[in-house]
Length: 252
Image (cartoon, rainbow, N blue to C red; front, side, top):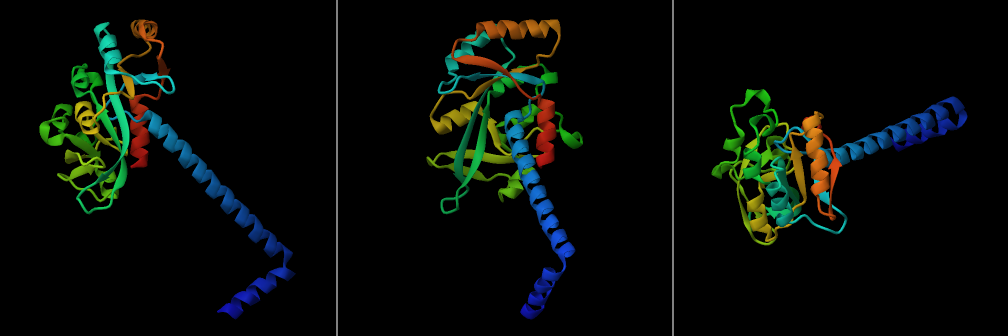
């Protein structure tokens, strides 16, 4: 076998065209691989910034300037000013394990203010549920369904329904609930109160602005919201929930 390979390689010395084709093929292959990696990285970044589990019609969010945080007081103050379309979100990446002796794995945890989410108009509460599933948003946030994960992502992590995950600090989360919803990304979604209790902190990652479109009324709301923000917070545009669902669907 080795002799045959040596013979084939030796033949390329006397055939410039064949050598050129091999060289061109290698270049094309490397360029194609590089393009795929770049596209994948860009898609992951876009996916991460657009993922809005269960929530559609999200065109803006409130975030803090670098090195600063959003507090519960900031959130309460803005809602008291009449901005009821705000929904608080906390994001963390943590090491989890299923049992005491199981290997740990890193997972993105997303806590959502479910009370504010459920108080929104039904048209803005949840992303479209695929395959005409009878599951409602209220059902998803029931006591049995504290931690929600996409079925495909759970399969990748070798997780099953009903399992309880343990944080690195020893805190045990509630049982997992598997769902096949396009708005779910590569994360575990739970009530923000449960996540803050588990992590022992109260800072927020962002405030979603839900249900504001391009009408004159909605533009006026966004203008008032910008004026009401304290100096350490700012409003930024983002991909809509519908776009996020397409991204999460393509990843799954």
